[in-house]
Length: 480
Image (tube, rainbow, N blue to C red; front, side, top):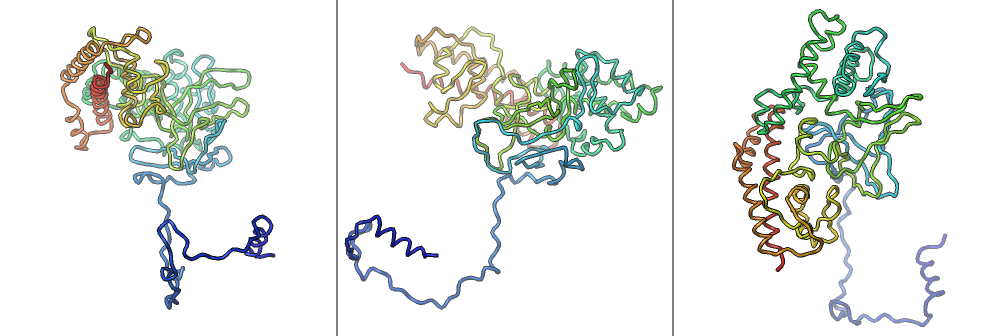
């Protein structure tokens, strides 16, 4: 085989000018003129190169945050490796529970890409209407739990039915959910307000939401007392010894379930499902994944959004409740966000700002239902300020729009100041400030439900404060 040098020389003879060339050591270089005396002389070294065996091993830096620890790499199999599939994702556990993260880079493909698939056999599934459709079929004929499920209201009690099915699955010998139950949060780890004390509900500083959660807790307790009374059969009593056990099962049913239309045989129904492993996907208002039901093989697939680049170590997320405000997230899941783009402020004054002018100041584009920050039009100064709270402000601020007619700067500034004053009045009427809420959270003396309630009121205040800041920037950037 010819050497690389010979191959280079032959290529030069074939494709280059065959004129003889001489080496000019005094030609001009980028750093100045070079002479022979500037050329370093070669010197022999008596030192030996380091012995590779004794060099410290290079450790690759983990792309995951330091507070995350990898879960058991085989935990999602649990003896069901032939049923569950996961492609290019890692399950990690952190202070707030489990999450799903990309284990490799994903290029922006034209079509959605599947990363997880879970068969119907491993889900707890129950239809929303008659005839009841259970899956898997683990409830024997004549079992009292079926009478309890059959007594529920098909229109409103989907969560009660799913909680009953979950409790029954824990009691079936050899059932998959007996094993998977170890990965569900305990009652002490749940942030659901169904497990909150009355004092915790007062921490919300939202009387409407607190009253609604009290009604839901009372509804669950009355359902337990009605069906798990003292004369209930032993096979029912052992499923839920006390109302706290049922409240926990109900919180799992509400916070970890999803609703999809599925078909089994010729029957197609809307169903509520508890899906293992897929329920570890966390929420984001800008998700990179979505669910897809495959009718043919009765599989739930987790798909990556088409055209989206995902780096190794990025978290895989979905949107739990598209278009819903923070109070709905708090009621259903026990968490909130200060950057929810769908949150609102209820203004009572008559002040209004020009919508098109406000949108252009912050480079916000799209329809009101789908506003987004247009980073292509931004010069970069807004990237750290414009978030879901500013987009929510574009939706919720009282505004007027008359085509492209420019607003009068003096009128706009006066309206913006009036809206700011109303926001500050809302903050002043609350019992605590955002700084005091931060101090409460830093004290680490709360339960999980109390902590979630304090975060909810803090996020509300941070949202209003962000609207005040946005109105201040809007006044500065108005053009004459």
